[in-house]
Amino acid sequence: MKPSEFFDDFSQLLLKWRNPLPGRDLPWAFEPNPYKVWISEIMLQQTQATTVIPYYLSFIEKFPDITSLTEASIDEVLNLWTGLGYYSRARNLHRAAQQIADQHNGQFPTNFEEILALPGVGLSTAGAICALAFGHKAPILDGNAKRVYARSFCVDDEKDSQRTRRLWKIADACTPAEDCQKYTQNIMDLGATVCTPRNPKCEVCPVGSLCCAKSTNLIEKFPARKQRVIRKTKAVTLVVALDQCNRLLLERRPPAGIWGGLWSFPEYSDHIDNVQKWFWQNYTMKISIIQTWDPFHHDFTHFRLNITPLLVQIADSESHRFLEVDIDLVSLDKPL
Ligand code: SF4
Image 1 (cartoon, protein in one colour):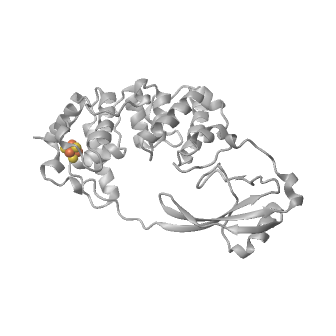
Image 2 (cartoon, rainbow, N blue to C red):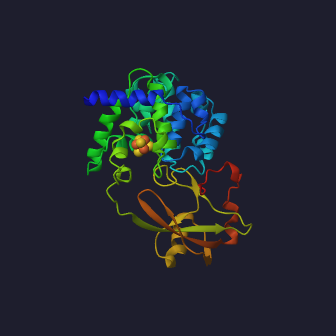
Image 3 (cartoon, rainbow, N blue to C red):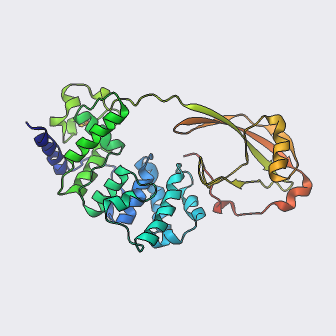
């Protein structure tokens, strides 16, 4: 069999598939308009569908279209993103909405290159929007598709970059020109419900008859492990500063970096002996240290952040400088 016939057979088998497994009633699949597909695809980057669903529903209720998102403040957008993590996605959505308003007259672009030019949209997300919203032929390579292709075609190149290049070629060869929307939805569903990371259900897999990993009994080997990155560690002190009325001092973080644009406790990274001087230099308020709480850590993709909370009291005379806000309107991170 020629390789091209093999790819054709793979896509035909996948196109014929009706997923018999429950649990894929995804709200964004009911009405695939480009705006909703875009929001869901951005939320699904690095986040599981079950986690995304309630966030997606709240987001669409508050911002049902591009116009409403364009008119929203970044704080309103971040507020709805609170707890979903990877906040640069929310900032990029907000910027992209402005770009659509300015450059495309408020209409979602239909062309692959124009979609790819939106902030926060990579190759796979642009492909998913083109395929799901417009039915254009465009391959995707999200985590689910990557796993299905890697196993079906035994892709085991040692270097991450080579492996990714090969997987893109396979994705392109398998993606049909016709019925691209259905094919794309099916490969996402297959990876999410059948060809799962652990215990794949090969006995009900529509492409099982062609699967290289299954026929060679090497499923565990695919997808190949990523080259190991040694995770760095950073340490910070978060200063929990109370005034005499037990109000907390929060400040907005810079737009880039972790928790970018969110409100948080002042972050201090020097020796604790110097914290009062640092606080005075930065906030011109005198503080006294009450207590150091037990440290804890928060893992990000590339590093571990060790956090030590430090409870301090702001001097009585400084209380008038606090601006009181409704805590529900402030965008804070919270654990998922
Ligand atoms: S046969 Fe098994 S390993 Fe191969 S694609 Fe299907 S579920 Fe994945």
